[in-house]
Image (cartoon, rainbow, N blue to C red; front, side, top):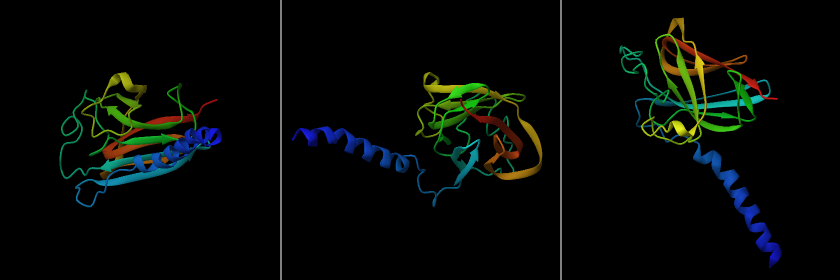
Length: 177
């Protein structure tokens, strides 16, 4: 009987670990205007995965219009964008533990704040709690030559970048330690 009781926490932990990836998935997008996007890449031996909604420009003014300056944004559509790191990383010279985070941004005309929030599963940024932010770093937006109709993320070398309309917002990721 004692051996069984001792294994209950192990069984619970195993079930939780196997269930967590399912909890992190975005809802079905069949009836959504903004389809789901996912990108995964390796940076310095660390697997980086982003899951996000892909809104379209559709002729709208995006920056300072649909996405206001100076307000926290879900960095996509529908559920908050999530980013997962398979190992501890450094972003902007600051350490961030392995795990899954809601990835919010606060756009500015000349500088953005990239926010890694501990509450990964959220709808939009409506209940963003700054007290749950694990890390906030600055990023400089870059004008890009090619129009990107549907918002996307790219992982290139040691950089992760959100691209939409004619703007890219990159931040560098390095393996910690």
